[in-house]
Amino acid sequence: MNNDKSKPDVSDFRFIKAVSVGSINPNVLLSDEGREQQVELLNKCLNDYPKGVIIGKDIAIGRYMLGEHELTLQRTIYHVGFLRKPAWLEEKEN
Image (cartoon, rainbow, N blue to C red):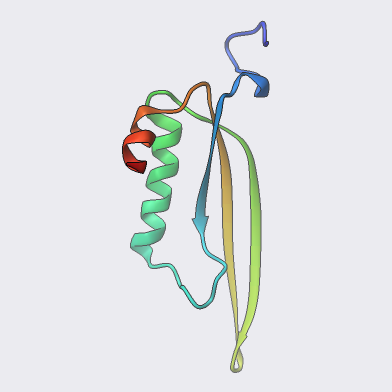
């Protein structure tokens, strides 16, 4: 247990939510609205009660050739830690 209560230790987190922003699947291109929804979820995780903390992130990059054109896509998965599972996440899952 962390003695400094200003910043929680990784062992203090009881729930971790993976929030994906972007897509690396060229068959399912993400619209601006879809990406905005992903960013809104991330912001809600970081700003609503209980506030989450980014404890890690994974970045995936896909490069695809479509005819003569090269398409580069990126997806970032943010791992957001919470001291307890937010009630608004439970409501969203039901």
